[in-house]
Each structure stands twice: as structure tokens, then as C-alpha cells.
Image 1 (cartoon, rainbow, N blue to C red):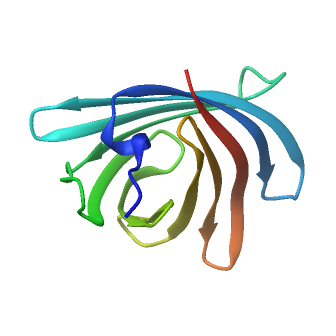
Image 2: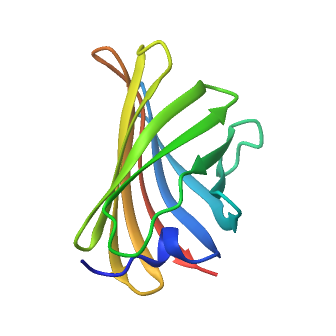
Length: 145
């Protein structure tokens, strides 16, 4: 298994890329993800904003069950003002981290795929669905600050 600095190291990651809304419109997006480790949990605080639109910003705080190096799966939960409480899993597969998640009532589901490009760079792709309807998707690069 390839070492994954995104989860296992405390860092700040700068995000830039594209957000696609449910109507298929593309928007430039920028943000930041901060990984911190505390006793008994890891925290992923993320902020994304559509560039040029101060109203369209998304904050999420993930609380992650810590993993040992070599472990391939862990769970997480988050609270997001737009989507409410979500729970999910991180699965590490070679150079990638896959996140599968859903809302407590199961109406929302999603996935995110992070691929390690370089030690300080990830490529991220993801989407959120409500049944058969796409709510949003994204394509961003995460670079270590």
C-alpha cells in the first residue's frame, strides 16, 4: 500500500477546480481542507466557495476514526449545513482514497475519489446524488500548502 499523506499527516490542502451544479452549469471553485489529529479522532475541516459568488460556500467538518499505517478502511461522520449529517467510509486502495457516504435517512448518497499524483498533490472527483438526480459534482486538485 502506498503511503497517503492526506489522512495520515496534519496539513492544509489548497483546493482549486470546477464545481458542477445539478443543472449542469460549471463554476470555478476554490477552498481549503485542514487535517488535524486529536486524541481518538482525526478532523477534516473543509471549505469550498464558488469563485465570484460569496453566497455559495460549503463548509464541512468530518470526524474520522483514526487508522494505523497499513490499515485500509475507516469510518467518518460529518455535519454539513446544506446536507445535514452524513456518514461514510474511507477505503485506501494503492494510490487512491475512495469515500462512500450517505445521509442518515438514505436520501442522499455520494462518493469521492482522491488519487495521489505527487507527494503534495491529489486529484479529487466526486458527486452527491438524491435518488436518480445529481445534486452536484466536482473536479479539483488539492495541493499541500
